[in-house]
Length: 449
View: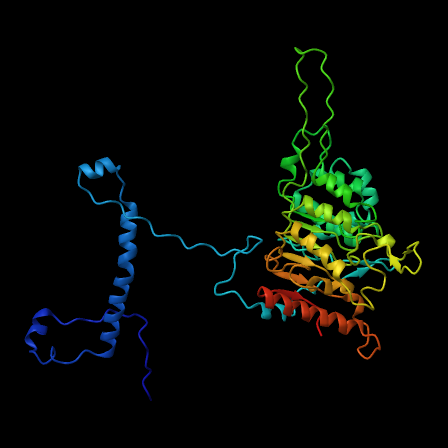
């Protein structure tokens, strides 16, 4: 029978030879080359010692008590070494920690299945066009779709007539970020005529009995979205009144010279730091004369949206009227600077280019311009010589991006006899080439082919 072999459950340390035996075994063992395991163990010990020495020395320097400079110089002690700098945490706009490594390319994010859908224009129940929710830049943290903030703002915008009356004393007390978003939601989901001047005044101005201060309440109010409101429920003159409140210059005569003078109250502007303004989708009462006036009052604007604005014209009501001289044989003269066929048939944009030149001289800090849906007068942006049209190398030298999308002509077939879509695409390419020739690079946001 075979013997049963049992493995021992207990292990004992390996016995080492005595020192006398190691010394008497001669030099043959010492001359043998070290094995691979011995070399690896030696490397591990050296690596551990090299890694632990700086940390231990650094900890020792931190734990040593510091002395004032006077005592340190008196005792002739070395100065305390400076601590190692901390590694800064990489955070996103919402304060969350970013994963390690470089940021992914933008093409990966755009092509991802989890990427948000691009914002498009919508139409109201009556068929009127409404701009996209965030068509104007300036919002750093956009609320996620179907989040609590998104649902609340959407409900407030749909019930704006009720909210404007029921919560009229509390609208200006909302945080600045929510008030900026509320105006955009009202323009997209609210009434067709927009927010209204009364509602805009209640959002911007605190009640008269509130002593918290108007200027402090709107210090960070830099974005004003008045899409679908200009020309319908808010006029440009009312916007100018908000930006530059009128001062009361009428003074009453004093009863006597010794009577104390009555201090005059200066009304502070509720929009002292405005940089982003949207006047998209205006109503029939929109006027380029008032637009030039508001441009003179807001020279610090950097982002402006003029989407769906009509062609530049200072006398739109006189375009369809003609006048004839009393002298015999005198020609028929149009009352306006240009007639109704100046752009479509004659292709003459000289008057529109002159108006845009005046506008560019007032908005000299502009960096972003939105002219979506304005294909009728896109040629006026680069019409004429340098001293006749817009000076892209001078007045608008800071403009880096121009949005030139035409959603109203996307359904026009390319083989139509009067191809407006092809003409709009040609105008986009011509503007891009004109600006790059006279100034340099510019980004054009256009429709995808």
